[in-house]
Length: 121
Image (cartoon, rainbow, N blue to C red):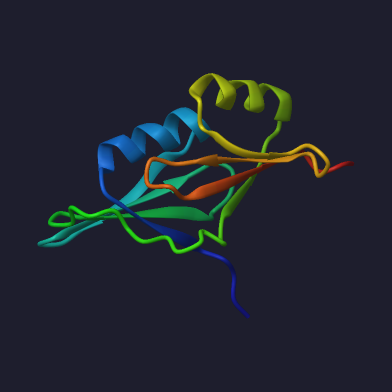
């Protein structure tokens, strides 16, 4: 048996990305690994064991090719309306689908992140 552990985004500016994920989603670093030419920072939500790994290569200067960006990471918001207002104020909403009740934000490197409402109980 397996369990989900982490998902990776390659980023160009570590400090900018850390600020974005803290401000937009409340994610904080939970562990780090470093080598001669890289730094990995794992971000957690404080509620689950799943982490987002930010990979920063010291010598990388060109943006990553995300193709058609047909992949995304999703988060479920406890207060969807408040989160939506917050993301509107930040100017990071890149796509909305009111019929499905979801929207997407874009991080500094162009990765899309889906924001879902709470599960109906």
